[in-house]
Length: 574
Image (cartoon, rainbow, N blue to C red; front, side, top):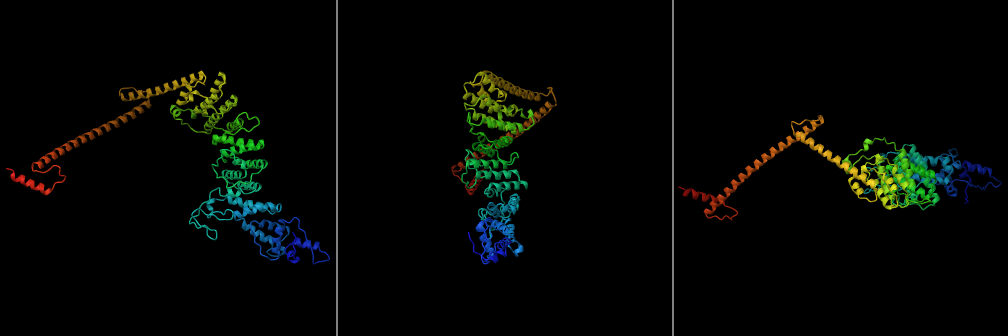
């Protein structure tokens, strides 16, 4: 684009233009042609610079300030060429702009058009630092909602005044995820620098993970298309970008996995499992999948069964679900879990076994998860017995206070694989402990024709032993009660003395209650006698009234009439 301009307004503000004019001077001093092929921003930005040189007031915005600042630096428009030159003016606007979140976001996005000048002038780094400082700030310190996309928004029921201040009487606190949506609009390179900046400022890993989840949902369409995907911790973005190619999604996924915090429990397990499933579909690098598997294994106790059912998309595809992947995740969990082995914590009595109440630990939670997973994959006829045994054997026996889950999985597997030999049936049944079956499971097992006879006999034996133990306990309690009622009986130890004392206290309380009941019965009997006397008196009064001609059906009696009758009776008496 060609510009027909005067020399003096330009060279009076720019050192570079003055030097070029002096170097290109010819015999005709009135004409000079200057060419700028590498000016930041091109002709659009040079037009703004030329207007400034002619004294026309510029309208600086977040969208043009980066280009103007880079062009001013390129043309060397310093204070040596005059006060209030373009470099100082643009720097003042930048410093003021860094105080506003939305304007900083817009300016940061325009920096990519002016590389490498925007990097050399530290505009990008200053934008990142400004955003990181605001993202890490305490949300309770904000007294008004931050503007979103240039429009200030207030809570429902409030109005926005002309100057953008909310008319609510009390400021509404911001949630910790207020910056997720705006940050998800950034390019990946800028977003990565923002995440590293907030991490260096000490932001909690949970908040960083929440932002990464939001960013991944927006820019990975294949992640959102995964079946049974539920955004449990964060709402889905308003809109998704256009579908990129698989190669672009693969590169983006690998970058996102690198940003995921490694702290245990910081990132939701269901999101990590969806990332792992997507990485398999996109054929990401093995190092990326290995990192995800290790991180999932570290917090496997927080996983859900539906998320663990990863379809098999490998070349062999022997089974419906990817058993090998789950096996590696379980191995990582068993290696990382350093839970101290205290079998006494896992010994349960008959009441806990019948009621199903037992302490929940990461290992017991994973045991329940694995038993459910085995029940889901057991109907697959292509599932080999060694793989089934390998998955079940990862969980130690003490981590299964109740073996109903593993029994259900074994029964389903035996039903789906009727061709197993007796030896193989006994091998798979050795994975469960018949002594830890509930009453319902034991009853079912004794009538299960798919189980080996030896296993059925074991179930019957332990059921009989359990019944004998229960009866012995009841008899022991009954004997103690009888001995406590015998004053001449000999007690075995101090514990029995305490128990007898407690029983005697209960007997004394029972005697007091019986005495109180007797008193109440006497009171009721006296009230009954008084009531009978009143009834007899009422009958006599009715006869008296009939004697003097009154009707018994009358509902009301005049007191004056009764008084006159009494006077007549008194006069007739001898």
